[in-house]
Structure formats: C-alpha cells, structure tokens
Image (cartoon, rainbow, N blue to C red; front, side, top):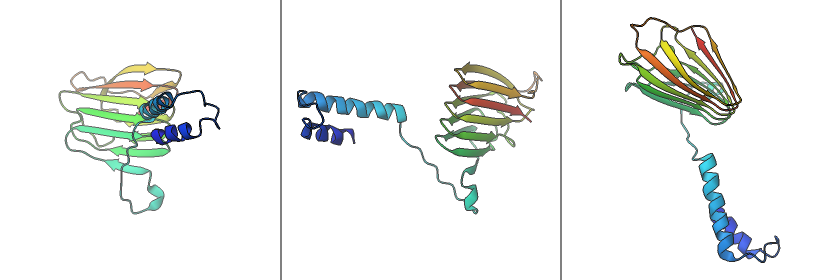
Length: 176
C-alpha cells in the first residue's frame, strides 16, 4: 500500500507541491512510512468462534490442555472464560477495547505459573479465584490499577506471578 502511494506521489509531485524532491527520496519515505505503520499497528489476529446466539459473538470460552493460554482484544468489547488445567504460562493482552477475563475453573501447575497482563488504552477486568496465591509485578503508566479482594496467603500453594503492564487504561482485578 505504501509503495502505491509512493508511485502516486512521484506521478503527481508537482500537483502536491513536492516537485523539487527526487523520486528515490519519495519512494524511500513511502517505504519507511509503511514499515513504521506496520510496526505500530501490527498484523490483525482474528479468532473464529461458533455461537448459537448471534448476540453473544463477543463472548468466548477458552480451554487448552497444555497449561498455556493466550487471549487478546484489539478493539471493542470481549469476554473470555479461561478454563485451563495446570496453568504454567498465560498472556492476556488488551489494546483499546474492554476485555473481561474469568479464570474460574482453572488450576495452577504445582511448580507455579507466570501470567503476563498487558493493557494499553482500554479497560481490563480480570476475575481470579481467591484460592490462588498471587504476587504482582506492576508497571503502571498514567492509568489506574485496582485490586479488589484478597488472594490466598497459604505458603503451601503454588505461586502465580502476574506481570501487569498498564499504559493509559484502567485495570480492575477481582479475587472471588
């Protein structure tokens, strides 16, 4: 797409006021703009879920038997129900929308688990079972992080380390 815009800019350079700029410079700038936009916005990831009711298209259930999960939301509202046995590693990523994650029905690997939560400009709400023993490593920009309730303090339970990175959005974590 950026290459096409570069060719168009070369063809109509006098009309758009860049007649004194050489063709290689215009093409280089067009390619660099395209690469920069690709790095900023990345590739779109789509997940297809089949649902009986069309009104619930933004609600999905996630289950994976290998102890790992990866859920993301770029724009809009999304609700995820994560039911993974023996979680070892997980990733929750929200960009601009509102994402709600329920982890009820999941268990932690006896060696512990690491969950990476990343929230950009949106709102992330996570419901974590209060039976989990959780520690947080938080990096908060200009947003707000709220933790509601208490996790388990039983030292015999495996430890879940949550690395929470919040930019300008809001994060609410509920232990229930």
